[in-house]
Amino acid sequence: MAREFQRGHKAKISDLTAGTDLYVGVQISGPGLTFDISCFGLDADERLSDDRYFVFFNQPKSPEESIQLLGSQAGDTEAFRVSLDKIPSQIQKLSFTATIDGAGQMSQIAPGYVRIVAGGEEVARYSFDGGEFSTERAVMLGDFYLKDVWRFAAVGQGFDGGLDALLKNFGGEVAEEEPAPAAPAPSQAPAFAPPPQA
Image (cartoon, rainbow, N blue to C red; front, side, top):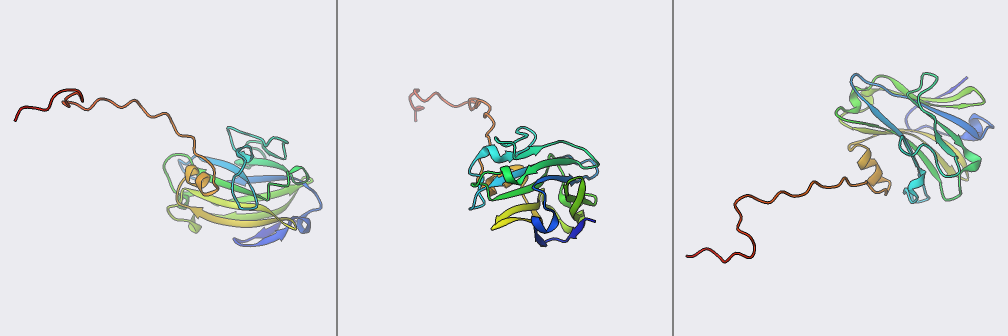
């Protein structure tokens, strides 16, 4: 039987399961909304000090495959495989997030959840819905964090910016798009021309 979590609840992973090979499923949806679901592998300062631990659609696994994006399955919008015993020591927290891609806000989402499955059995679930949020465009759903042992926290914290703002919050760099070449300003005299006569 899965343990139900409310926002702010925490537990040792070992109190939920003896397993270290975990499935994390996220279910999030809303009318006309598209979501990017990611996992940030953070250091002791809660910073993304190694971009290879930002696991998302363009980078579906960490170098040693301790965090893997599995795609949509078993009724989940997105799923991850987390092998706690393979996570390198510099990674102290895994933050599972969802951001809206395009227009919209988190208050529009339907009831959803983040859940942990071990050995084929759901051991924890944190449910949420749009009533918990307002104009936010991102939400930090849940964390695995190391405090002597691995633990789970149901976060449910909305975040005003989208994915770029979350990346900056965690100390990551947002890839800048190439700016379009600047068009010359109309009716300006070239810099080498003499000043007009008075």
